[in-house]
Length: 198
Image 1: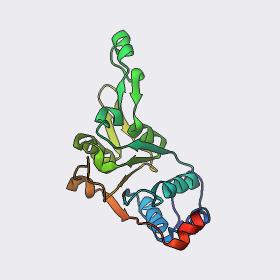
Image 2: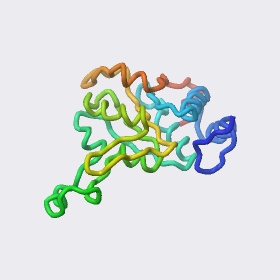
Image 3: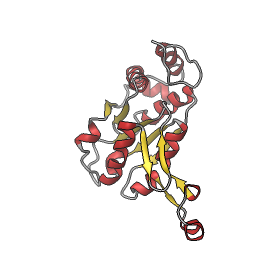
């Protein structure tokens, strides 16, 4: 199977897996599943405690394919406006609303550049913020008032992570969000792999 996600020819998924596996200790199974899901056009939910290589794997994949990795911290302050973007208030007063005074948020940045939008601690973000992602994940397009529609490049993916063992300040994810994402559970590696990392 030849992958089409890369901006430059990268060979088969097996070739990509081999190149990344040389730079990442262990995680062969997780890497295979991540590559398969991304190549199939799926968005991802990475579930596991801190220190289980979630960010490392994503950095390795995006570096291999030469696409951006846009980080967002999921918390109560991550409003839909912070995720999508906003009009510059000073320029609005001087020029009125128009597309040129719109400041893009990380979601639009990832869509326009074809990057991975990586939302850490996904289940700490407010429900209305998570609902903002539904159209972007399902249709790969989002419409911003007074700006227009933004169509995502084919390499755009939403990748979320959450710590299943920490329930303080978290929300329960809706079925509509869960249904749009592939779930991959990661755990700590064995002692031999941990020694190799150190």
